Every structure is written in C-alpha cells, then in structure tokens.
Image (cartoon, rainbow, N blue to C red; front, side, top):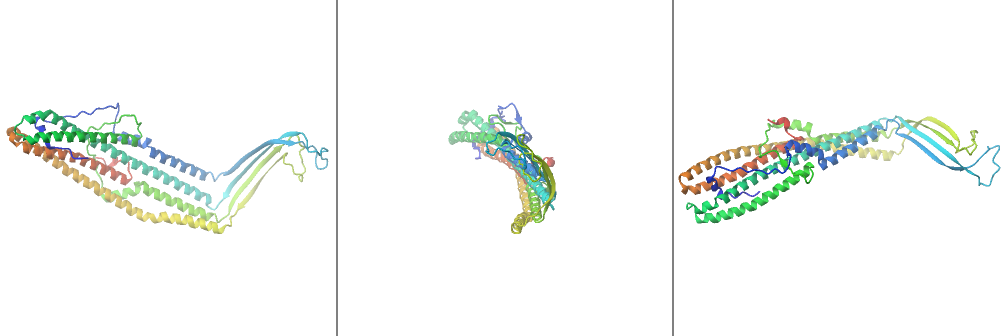
Amino acid sequence: MNNITPWFLCLWVFSTGGTVIYANTSPHQYTLRELLEYGLEHNSEIGEAQWRVQGAVAQLRQARCGYILPYLRLESENGLVPDAKGDIFKPTSDTTGLRPLGPFNRIQLEFVQPLYTFGYLSSLRRAAAGGLAAKQADLAANRVDIAFEIKELYYGVLLARELQSLVWSLSEKLKERAGELEENTAVSLSGTYKLKLAMLELESQEREITDQLELARAALRWKTGLPENRPIALEAKALEPVQVAVPPLDILIDQALRNRPDWHQLQAGIAAKKALVDAARSEYLPQIFLAGGIRYAVAPNRTDQHNPFAKDDFNYFNGGLFLGLRQSFEWGLLGANVDKARAQHLELKAKEGAAVQGISLDIKRAYLVFQQTEENLNRTRQKRRLTRQWLKLAQEEYEFDPGEVKELVAAFEAWSRTEQTYYEAIHEYNLGAARLAQTMGLVTLEKWQK
C-alpha cells in the first residue's frame, strides 16, 4: 500500500486524538479460530481431497475383499423351449420341429476362494493401505495450506482496516481544521495548497484501501466457504501481534519430521511401492484356490433325462467342489512388471534423503524469517514510542510558540509513517508465525502460545 500523506497531520495539534467506529453489518463477528474451523470444514479444495481419501478407502476395502470369496456369482436365465417328451430309447414321434413351447428356468451359483497366494493378496492390501495413508497425508497438507491462506487473508483484512482507520482520521481532521489553518498566520501561503493536495491524496488512498478491504473480505469469505451473500465481520477490533514462544531451531526440525504431511506422504508412498514390488514378485508363484458351485435347471414341458450320458441343458441339478492351482508362465511380462515396480519404489526412495535436507532448510528459512519479523517489530515499537514522545513535545512547543509549526509538521510526518510501518510490521510478524506453522505442518501454533 502507498504511504499515507502525512504533511497536514499537524492539525492534530487542535485535538488530543480521534476514535473511528466500525460499522458492523453482520449479526455475528468471527474470530480467527471460527474462520479456521469453518474453512477447514467447508473449503472446496479440502472437500476434493476428502473425496480422494474416500476413493483410497474404497480401494483398500477392495483389496481386503480379495481374501474371502472374491468371486461369488449367481446367474439366472429364463425363456421358452419346445416340448420334448421321451428319452433316447423312446424318442418323440413329432419330428417337424414345430412343437409347442413351454417355460424353463436355469440358475447357477459359482464361487472361488483363494487358499494360498504366496503373499500376493497381502502385498496388494499393504499397497492399498499405503495409498490410503498417502491420500490422508495429502488431505492434511491441504488443511495446512488452507489454514495459512485463511490467516493471510484474515491479517490482511485487519491491516486494511487499520490503514483505513488512519486515513479516515486524517481526512476528518483535515476537513475540520482546514479553515483554521487558513486563518493561522504562522502557516505560509503554500501550506493552503499543500492542504488541498493532501486532502485529494487522502481521498484517493481512501478509495484504494476501501476497495482492497472489500476484495480481502470477499477472498476470505470464498476461502472459508462462507456463503457469498453473507456479510463478514471480525471480532478483533485491532491488529495485534500473536503471542507465541517458538522453541529452538533443532527442536523445530525434529518436530517437523513428525508433523510434516509431505514427509508422511513420502513414507506412505515408499511403503506402497515396496508392497507393489512384492506383489509383482509373487506373481511368479502359483495361486492355490478352492472353487465350486451349484447348478439347477427345470423345464416342465420336457422329460427329465436321468441317463448320465444324455446331455440335457434344461433339466438338471448338480454341483461340485474342487481344488485348483493357477500358474502363469509369461516370464518376460512378469519380469517387466517387477522391474517397473522396483524402479518406481527406488525413485521414491531416492527422494528420502533429499527430503530430510529440504525440510531442514525450509524450517531454518521460516525460522530466520520469523526472527527477522520479530526484531523488526521490536524496532518499530521503539520508533513508535520515540515518535509519540517527539509529537507530544512538539505539540507542547507549538502551544507555547505557534511559530514552531514546522517542527510540529515534521513530528506528525514521522508519526504517521511510523504508525503505518508499525501495523505493517505486526502484519508481517503474524504472517511469519503463520508461515512457520505451515512449514512445521501445523494448522495453528496453539501449543507454542504464551
């Protein structure tokens, strides 16, 4: 945002300060915690990730179903067949083929139950479990990223509100004291023109900040999943620094390896690919299974043939149970599948060492940035305190000698710049804490709050 024009802040000499009242058009004022909770539940990106998790859950359930009756089917057929009375010794005398039709029904139940697959099914189950863990880690990463974006927009709204408040206050004081400055002989003629230019500049900045505030509120409403037509108001009346006590860097790095979703996702992916390698190798070995079924068919208009050598497709009742063995001999294809699975596993495995270094670097970078924002905020506090003392002294000198207006103007210029810099430093400090939480894989820094 542009620096707020500070020259005619000297008008504050005629008053001790001002209060800006914010209009509250919403029946409910949201805290940051409420926005985070609502956003993590209603954000569309998180919703997409949740459905991906549900798909992985279904895939794991499918892998588990391979243990018990993976093939169990019932088929039923119904139709019309020509009459056929007699048997092979006394066949029907009607050979025209134009015999009456009658109904028939045929039912068949078949099943296959694996008995021993040399680890093939268990490997598929472990691969599906690893895939589910990876999707859950991806969901956690989405939650962390969305939480940071909500915080960023939340603090942005508060910053815009503070700057808007400052602009409103300056504009009000300029309009109130414009006439008094024109009558004050201690102010040069050029001051009148500077006053008008300052008022025009403040009007322009007021429109700009108002537009930015409205856009920030709309973005916050969209990111949290709030209805588009719902007014959004924040419970916080001022932008204040978050209260956190960050532990040392080595502790942060150690905790990050336990909290970072991308690290968990990588570990889950490695486990899933390793299981697929085992499954591909198991395909070299036979699969032992138990199979069987029951068949029943009936056609009332046809004679039931009891001769075991006479085939009858419309009247029978039989079943069976047998032990089976399935062995694949496509050695070239099986070997290619093993090599492909091994390559994918080793590809992820190769990222493991670099991931540890990358996470450590990310934590160190976020930690140093946070420390810089903290130091900058402390320096800005000191500048703010000094400029307020300077302003107070300049006001007292002006009241004693109106000819000291230039000193008062300079003091107010410094004060306005410091106020803006102070709120921007708070904004950067809060974002630094939010980025550190995101880098740690945390939604909030509640456990570090003072």
